[in-house]
Amino acid sequence: MRDVQTLTGKVAIVTGGTRGIGLYTAMGLATVGAEVIILGSNPEQGGNAVSFIKKRVPRANISFTKVDFGSLQGIADFARAFNEKGVGLDILVNNAGIYAREKLWKTVDGFESTFGINYLAPFSLTAQLLPSLRKANAPRVVNVSSLAAYYAKIHFDDIQYERAKWYLFSQVYSQSKLAILAFTEELQRRSDAKGWGLTALSVMPGLVRTRLLEKEIDRYSTLGQIFKSFILPCISNSAKEGAKYSLFAATSPDITPGALYGPPYSYVAYRGPIRKIWIPRLATDPKVGGKLWEISEKLTKVRWG
Image (tube, rainbow, N blue to C red; front, side, top):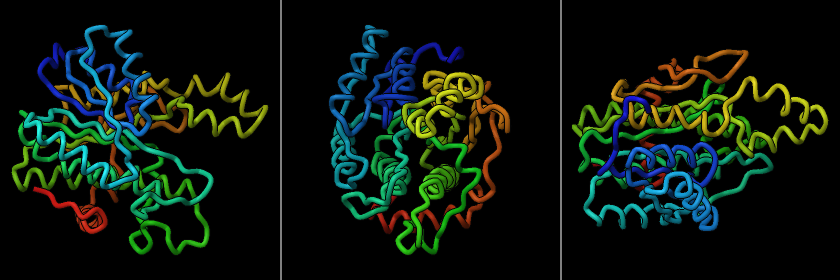
């Protein structure tokens, strides 16, 4: 954020901003003067996040609002209340996500949880905040993806794994992160075609040492502890380091609409300087993006524009 002098007067929303990458993304935006609204499902964690940031940035204009990303009604209620304020939304960072490893479970709307929370929730939230985004000058939507997207495909014949014999959690998660990339590309195409004025971007924070990752590693007892202590720090980002990609996409004047930003892709280390990196072919295919968009509108019952 070296090129950003101030975001004073700008309004930003960061979903999943109570911990990890989202927490440091929210703090980074608040540090340069933005009014930041953290959205999350846990009020206690939200209060802790606000206190954490204000302790380090005493003048931070930051608040927390509870939103259940597994509830379309909860998302709609927040978006309606925000739009009624009549202010522009300059930055929307769709960061919230889950990794449901153990078994298939569904949201209150009956969606497979990973697809519902990681993809349908940001699709629905962005659609319903479009009026406020369009009131801002040069609004940006930043969607957080994952390296897992490179190994995924979108299963249009069973997109919520309702007929699958086995619940393959890694496959489900990967699909959701590819879907968010395809959403970014299609959102940029539609914004350009319809004059919405949005800049849609994706980020890939590399391998990040989150509590979720460390919990997975701990499953492998002694070997996992050795890996976590000696190898993982050399090939991964801390949550604070991982947030720099989101902050760059949200604030840098030197961006390309529709681009994906992250560390240089490597089979050795998933960390490094911020670069514009290649996007999986499926995510850039207009036919894939258009089909996914139509399905998403039907499932969420939202309409754009």
